[in-house]
Image 1 (cartoon, rainbow, N blue to C red):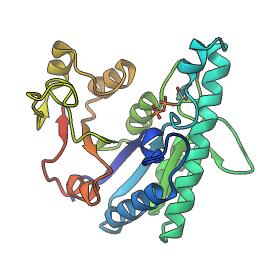
Image 2 (image 1 turned 180 degrees about the vertical axis):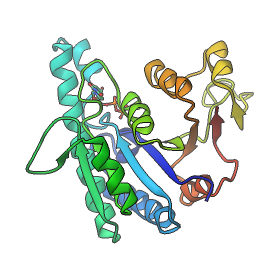
Image 3 (image 1 turned 90 degrees about the vertical axis):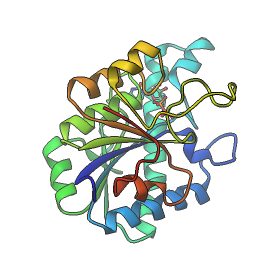
Length: 234
Ligand code: UDP
């Protein structure tokens, strides 16, 4: 395996599958199988999931809601997604722990860094829920922050596009994909990889980011063994 410990970031939207809202169980099941295959090879895996398939703070603010209030709702949405993935992971036989940045004693453990690391060492999949626990942040930032805290070798951002392109491939037929790109080039070219807070955190702490298509069965394994699919930012 190319890595020992990674942080996988999944957007909330990716859990929707073909649906317009909520969670597609088939999609979650497919993710769980892909994650198990990689875990079985000995990789330590921590996961951060977004909440955009259920609730997004920024969108709610646009329709008149208080931003902080809406952001807390968004963080709760990530816990719902985390629990769905936790269930699917346990169904395929993995041991898991859900640790949240907002305490919810009846359903998960509070986030304690040392405990998270211990779970990983013991071969449990760790899911970090409720983002950073702070409004005005995103789950991309939570992914970057947790990756640094647990000393992950990389942030793997699973999306529905297969990497970073010179332009939007859905709009520009001449757009080409980068196999590798530096943090500086991403800034200089104004490309969108993660939000700036997350991106800067990764850059300053030298955590590479890999953007890849998680919806293609087997891609996660390819990344884990070091095949050059997706785009590597370092
Ligand atoms: N959120 C937040 N602080 C965090 C992480 C998330 O306030 O540290 C809120 C924010 O409102 C965001 C929502 O939770 O819109 C869902 O997260 P995100 O938009 O990052 O999910 P994704 O786009 O990955 O589905």
